[in-house]
Length: 136
Image 1 (tube, rainbow, N blue to C red):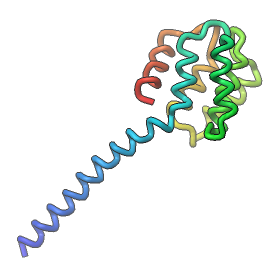
Image 2 (image 1 turned 45 degrees about the vertical axis):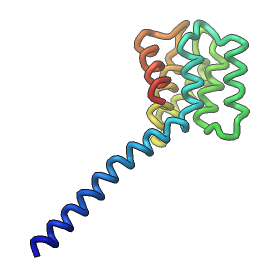
Image 3 (image 1 turned 180 degrees about the horizontal axis):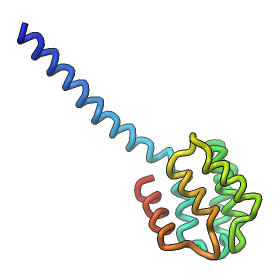
Image 4 (image 1 turned 135 degrees about the vertical axis):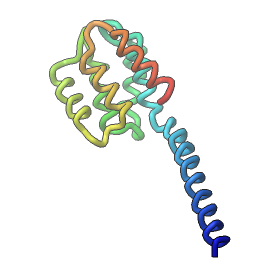
């Protein structure tokens, strides 16, 4: 009887360990899912006052992409409209994204940074954007 319990216990431990390592694989696979957020973070990281024509083209590609989520499109549109700061209308839309419980933490962080943008990126926000670019 003890041998059976021991085998059962070892089997269950193997399942738990396998599940633990499998979740890390899935978490790493999600990195590609945030490619659009990473692209927008890259634009925001050096943004001063308003986006350049090249940055607007990158952001327009987000708006035109069928794989972009509604939240990503709201953020991209808000970045395109930045003129020293976000517009009142875009701030309201960004607040909806921020309040949305479905939004991933990277989406939420980026929306907050765009919403609070004023003439440039703060050191704190720059670190957050660098983290988004690194971790996805």
